[in-house]
Image (cartoon, rainbow, N blue to C red; front, side, top):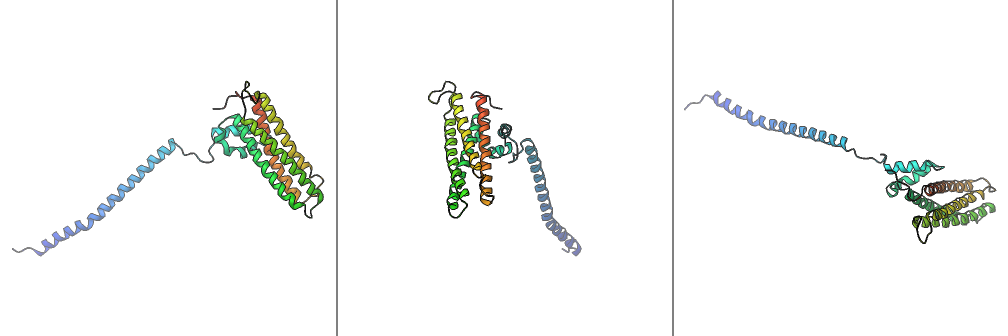
Length: 240
């Protein structure tokens, strides 16, 4: 049977067109589907992100706000907040814990300063200004005492009891001890810088006095927070 050549050619061309265009159509459909799914996922993500924003490092928290407010009563509020804000989760809006942590930070600073002065005082014994060497030795003695007093303060804070507490005495008596020791520690630190008044100006004097000033600020802040807690008492309500 005879078949017209054009008729066969048209049928084959039609089949070829279908086979050739089908993959493209399928790919386009898949691309559109993926695009729509992506858009839908993005919309859902943005919706939940709006309802539940992810906190950032700079986001304010109740604990950080409590520390900032409490530090406002100190002489060096920015130093206070900077040194204590990293312990916000441990402080938990608790005035007693805030005072305790502040004393702990002060103790760490004083210990490092004592070690530093001890190290450079040995170096100053060789060929340095005798007045500078004497000032450094005295400064080390001052900080050695300050460390003991701050340590005693921290120990007492850890043993705090209520008004009817046994062993450590009443709350007011215990806090009076802490206040006395922290005040004495601050005096020792101030005495260190006073000892450099007769020392000639130079890198050594500048470095030591600057470092001591930084430690004094931390100790002063700790004392202020201790005084604030002692005034409020152990039953003071914590912010919510």
